Image (cartoon, protein in one colour):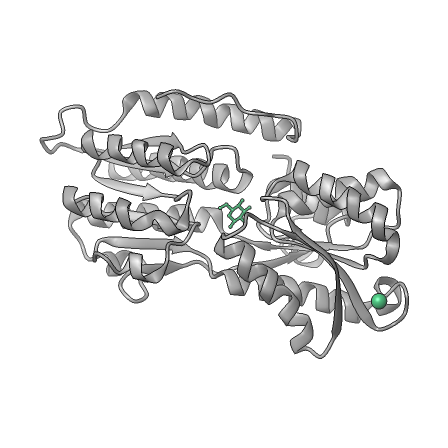
Length: 361
Ligand code: BGC
Ligand code: CA
């Protein structure tokens, strides 16, 4: 399988090193593939993992957690070998479908799919059903009708609305605690900018809606100054925020960002412009975002539980492999869904958990 050259322009050095290490691990697992002959049972469990792109901070974390937890599970079992084969979809649904075809023809036992295009799941599900291979979708949620196409289809993720609500509440609490600081023009209205994730992604649509709703539900008046997609990307968010700062300057009181990478991009632009920083919030709780929370440049973030997602997927994979009832292994809703809770992270919660100063990573 050909790998694409990636652009490293917007990555910090530790990010880049982590991505390189992950890339190397993926090459190894890709070479190992699934089962060459497509038949015969042994102690090896073959899992095909299809990522929408390897070049995404949060998704790389989920993949690394899955790899680590699989090694731990092997250690506990003593006899089982878990062969994770990871494919980079390079944000292209056609590429990803080819990779899934290969996984199926090479005899994978289970597929974990972070689908590029959430609306394209039906074809993939039909192929998997024909091959009798269960599919666990994660993070990018197919529509409900598709999930219901076959009983061996699962979705592991977090509820997008909940992430948005918790993010909005972070802003609400900070605003109410120190309105004199954040309400710069003193009109009692929250003038905000919104950095949105990829268009069509459930987390972009619903976090955008529910974060603001948390303020209006609490009776606050809001005014949207600017809103646009930066595709989950730090560099794009920095460029967008730079434009907005040129247009609105310190009129922007709050910056909602659908994820941490984009929030960090906004903070880069604010620092560059040398303006008084507005209140900025993200989602994910990536390592660099936690550092920004500790430093006070990011007001707060909402933990998107990468490790929980990876753990639930592995539990499902193991249960399916043993022919056990998946509902015994994970908390299954409607027979198909595993929901991981979101959690607010602020300087205070980090301090309460004894995480200040943060351990080096
Ligand atoms: C995360 C983003 C990530 C996206 C990828 C979201 O849940 O918050 O950081 O880029 O998933 O699908
Ligand atoms: Ca105001």
